[in-house]
Image (cartoon, rainbow, N blue to C red; front, side):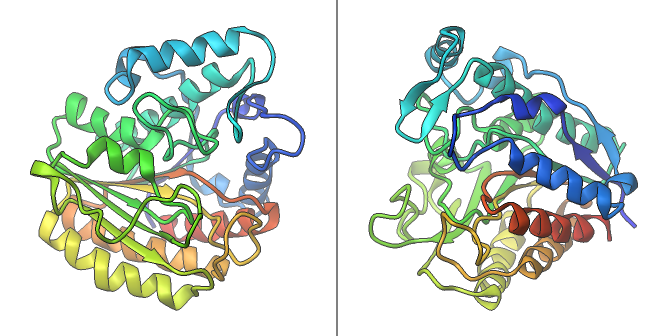
Length: 315
């Protein structure tokens, strides 16, 4: 059995984008209740993060963007940065706390305290661009963790695996010209589907060409389609890249019950994909893997999918 960390902070629920918003505090409450009821939480090392330092966030985001989020939060009311990305009084602090969760997890893995971890954090991050919040995301948790591993732990090659139903535009753009970070995304791709990026032809630019691998899929794909993408596309790519650490942007909104996606995955798919990626991490980087929560908006499906993910991490 692997030593798995579970990163959570009770203040994650304080970010609230307003009534009816899909990315709501109840998401984390459903996850934690499920993990506690199933006794999975008791099998993990529980880690409580602190807010990420501004200088670490600035490895990925502009100083202007960071200060802009802080200013909006200080207004003391809800402010729509974009139509679907609303800043509340707690958003800046909680977004820094979410980044801190990813940092605490990768630091614990690098210190040998745990083998892998799941970060039950919010708000999510993979849509956040260098100087733009969007898609419910304010700071790019996974991208910042990747840079932190390079700058503070001296790692050279980081792989990011994203299976959220939406393409990881912010993560891709952060690293598209950087050959030291490999970004893989399997996602729904259809005319007008958010964020309208992630075509197969997007493979990176300049020195980073070939270090971006998108697997765009039409709506209606199943567990088998996703497993095929992992085995036939991701596995050989990681074999060639030889990562020293694997980060997973773990979105669960490709579940068939999710209201924001159009895929047909069951919760079992997330266990299957997790086992495959854990196996790849074991082959290439001593099992060093951290997953960070992204999407997933049907509470029951989200909780069940995270349970399957956690069981695979612990095996």
